[in-house]
Length: 195
Image: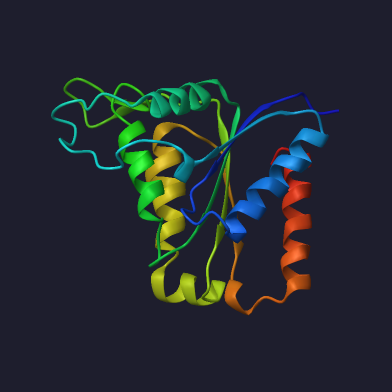
């Protein structure tokens, strides 16, 4: 029997009536049914400026919603990022959320006089659930899965989150209702297994 986990679902599609929302709710339903403690953050419901206005030179104080989001990230065992792939990568809202929160001293820390860094989110795992209109093979062959690598390798694993698994739902605009329902069932099962 698996142990109970604290799971944080981050839904990054700014559209209130999106398939990403349905996927996030499906994962939540499966995880809660298995007894996990689940928090769902819908980014377009949070109040924050997504622009890191001074880069890393000067800290921009976090809005209350970002303070809350950081506490949820800090406390969770497993993160689930649900979002569409737009222009080969993340929606601007989700990118801004990461830019504002994933800061030196919070998620990573460069070592003095070294090219190495400390990964401050070690011990956490993640699942990416992303949709795209293009076929998966096209995203891999033409774009080299750039958005997947940005989230998995250059963001989450850079900060110590491991493993990071990826579920890609391709050809979304061509999927029939029954196919969409099958994907929702698969995502519910992922939630039940907290994977």
